[in-house]
Length: 474
Image (cartoon, rainbow, N blue to C red; front, side, top):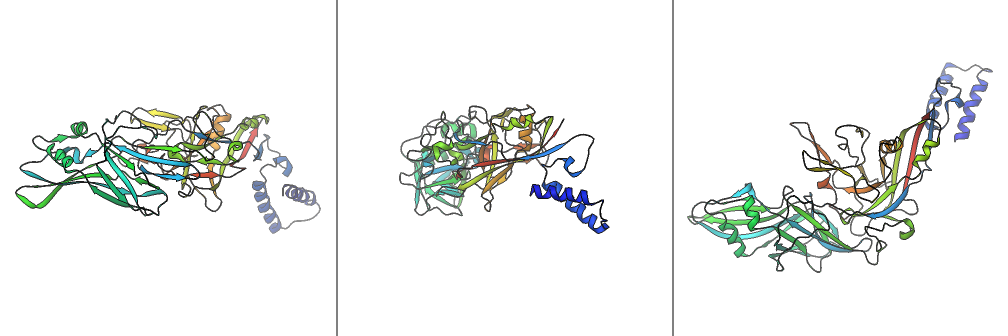
């Protein structure tokens, strides 16, 4: 196409002196010329008879090396997430996963006080789920235990964290998994119900004192489970009682998990017998280890990292380099039988040791992950991490495609190190919200990351491809 187009342009230049060209023909040719100039961006201006005062070259390349590897992140924060995981599933691709949830309960309204003579009725636990992963053909069982160890509100819990809980469960809940979600409940011991009701008498009890008496709950899967559930912080302990003088009116109060108090998912995986068996914090896997495939499963800490070892080669062109457009596409082979590929992904910057980079925001206590930014935000602005780029999965092309223009330009000018990017599935299309009253942005990446087991298998032998349009001037 390039040779044919150049020949057409040069023939037009040579013949324009030998024959007249009508106004209509000139207009048509001019239109074609503009179109061809855009399509053939690697042709330099001198080839079409233009002589700009400054020599400018607009070039295109898709031969820059994209190095991929499957890595295991050493810190997968699952604390105070929008979804809590409970269950187990033996995945032929990613291994056997067991997920447990630990959470502190919040007293409805922040305090609990009753007046007059009251009578205990019942205590039950209620859970609602909106996410399932694994085999959904069989009924499942989850067990609720009482914590025996305090949750630390100053700590950031990860998928490897654990908290002690009583051996005997308080209740067992039966759940029949469905794609649209559902709920289940079970009655809790009356002794516990009376204990909680007793706290309300006299001056009552506030949240700070309540958590000293009742440290929280652990929700764990039954031994024969084949499904992992996702609970959107819909875990309630409901206490029912009535006044002795009025037996017809039932009163109640809820104690529930909330993102405002410590709660997290522990996710353990046995990868024996899978292509990921050798994966560890100190050993990443290359294509040679996995038959060319790469893998992503965020809640388990598995992800694909990309590096651009030859990006500096662009500096070999004479003059200054400016990247006009750069796109990075990941090619998806499929998912595991447990569920479909993640619907949206983002990219996070890492250091040389495969740790995700972040900046602490002192005013909010938030960790601002260094996510790939959109073109609307820059690396120099005050809120420089408030423009995270989220891309959807293209089922037609089977790709995730990111705009990496700003990121690569920052590497070329020495603004940031070339340590690579890691794929992170998300469960929301926006990771930032803006206050309607103050207009201030809030970073919401943590609630919507590391809370799903849906994985992606990237194609072999080509997992990813980088396409760059760039300009250089002397």
